[in-house]
Amino acid sequence: MLHRTRRPRAALPRTKGNPRRRPLGLHIIRDLDRAYSLLHPVRRRILEMLSEPESSAGISHRLKLPRQKVNYHVKEMARTRLLLPAGRKRKRRFYEQCYVASAKAYVLSPELLGKLAADAGTMPDRLSAGHLLGLAAQMQKEVNRAMDLTPGGKKVATLSLNREVRFTSADQRAGFTRALEKAIVDVVGKHASPFQLKDGSPAPGRAFRIVLGCYPIAAEKDKEWRGKDDPATEPGGWKDVAIPLPGGRVD
Image 1: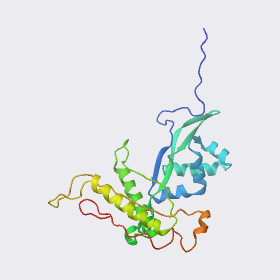
Image 2: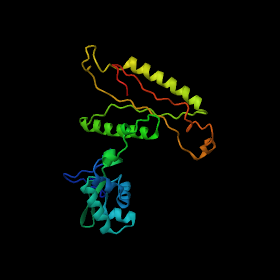
Image 3: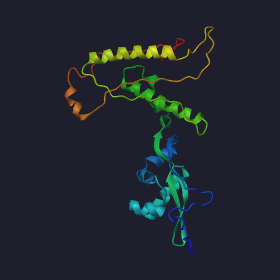
């Protein structure tokens, strides 16, 4: 009785100590060396195509770039851990090392800019776009830090709400602001724990941050609103909202 021998997959046979890999979810870039590699035009093209493992020869062929040039960039990206080894594939009598992107998506940390990064503390006007961007940078840094301190295999407990709304006037926007402020105060007062006990000592529990922002979505079709009563630019309507939290803290 004849048995059909199943051939191993020639494209990417697994090798000891160098298993086939898939990109992870998210890679946070915090150092300048990796940021340079990520922003380099050629290296970014290489990274974009390596959602599946490929060798330098395959990259060179697909991108129509010289093999020597591709080899150099691949080695540099592997050095900075933007590329990870992903097994080898056989080509004639030789084996070629394959690489895969270290993640599906990348984030540049505000920490790369040091003191030049957007900071809500240096822009006290809560109604300014700069303050909103500063809060966004602060949120990114704090979420990055929480991810670093979370044990492997566990997810950080986060919540994201994203909704598009429309206003036809600054007065309508003002009514929305008042109602939203009241709703947040009610929810925080009902469901959150205080920061201090009655004797003034810190209360138990883990601190979470709520960041609320609202901004106009810029679109070409909205040119018609660039007039006197544009809800996106009228100074009236917004007010400086300070949300009282349990225990007397205000953020």
